[in-house]
Length: 301
Length: 301
Image 1 (cartoon, rainbow over the protein chains, first blue to last red):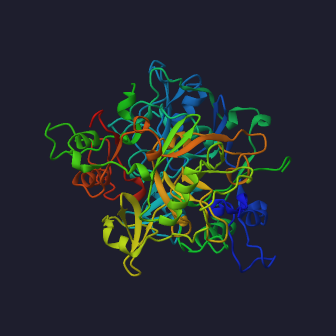
Image 2: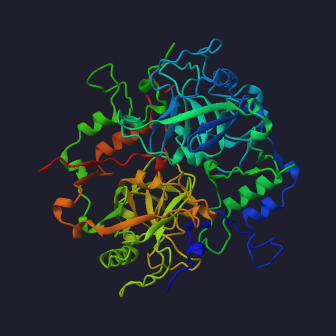
């Protein structure tokens, strides 16, 4: 007896069933259904001045920066990008189940004027605390988890601090044992969330589109996934702010607002798996398993 | 001012410091140090009769099967492999941050005699309960987490059940909405642990070596990461049991015993990050972030 292949793909990753409240009766409500039912106000357009285009030979990786969480590091990144600092540099580390890292492989390129070593931004400004959108789910690493300005985050009510969480696709800035950084080394998470890094290294944003162009790169054979002497680096064609490219060349992305009812419905259906495929309903969800929907706006929309 | 690149790679992934108890005084003890200090009895050689070689164009992926946890599915896999069922089939799904899946893309190949649909093996035999090695760390999905026969697992003291956990690199068997499976579709986890699948789909083992040959494959552009019509599948050259290949062609792998003191020391140093790089010690570890050391035995060893 043969299986129907697409139907039996494990986890039915994009189908999220709900037997009740389906307008079709029998067919479970899917994420697609929920996304189709969203209204324009459920979506936000990331600020082009805080959107990075990391252009690789294989295509564009689009990163949303978090200036409200890591203003000093984001300012450094913008100054570096506007000076075309990263153009012609390379991805020089791809460690399986961990991170992709890019920087100056020769460490020869001068750092532009105005880019300084800045203190780490491991927790957000106290003002962020009130903007935190908590989840009901527990977490191993943080007293509370949820979202802040659209990014996955942890919060400690005791210290009233908030911080970004190292989920898959999050982007940060490498540093030495000294906590300061000038943001000339950046990384993206491409594996199981290394949450032990939370509050240890400054996160500056997350990949909105194109993470697979990083996660499918050949792994480096050197220590910690650095490319060895005879392995080709993955060159960075250019890194630009969206606001610095002509409007016609920008990707018209929209991100589902984490404070929308639609986002909460999607999260809840990911939490409670009621479709036929699931024999056991987990009834909870890991912060880093919550989908953060991104779409391309309709032309003229 | 320039950073020392290798020193400031984020997370210092392979360095696990401990200021006390270092025989060198100043230098933190690393995982390498701890591994170097292990004795031969800390390691086990996986049974060749339960070791799978998944041969791709890019090299060999080595999988350790878990016959004590999923005996019926493992028996099916062995029968399929011994009939060379998977040879010439393909990886037909690579979904970013989720799974790689392999099967018969045309669904034409006859299933060998002796391979039957079997009931799911979502929890282990009750006898496994006593062999569980618990961790002190909490978990979002399971009342207790730890290891069983060397595999990451969950346990519920209330129901006295034990099950394998969907960590990065774990290998399972796809199924339809019906719970039964004949093991003709297999998958490996290549993203943030999809723990919602625990107790929903039968896990049969884990990748010991070569996971990067799966995780760096191009992502499929179709729904759920299936390769589209015009995307080349990744062919399976052959799948064999180690016991069915000449001894000279076998990989002499050894796995650190999860019940060894060395494993507990490594886990504890991953849990408590005391090296200089870390400014904040997490003091806990996610089951799916615990390294499971594998080494190649010395020649003649």
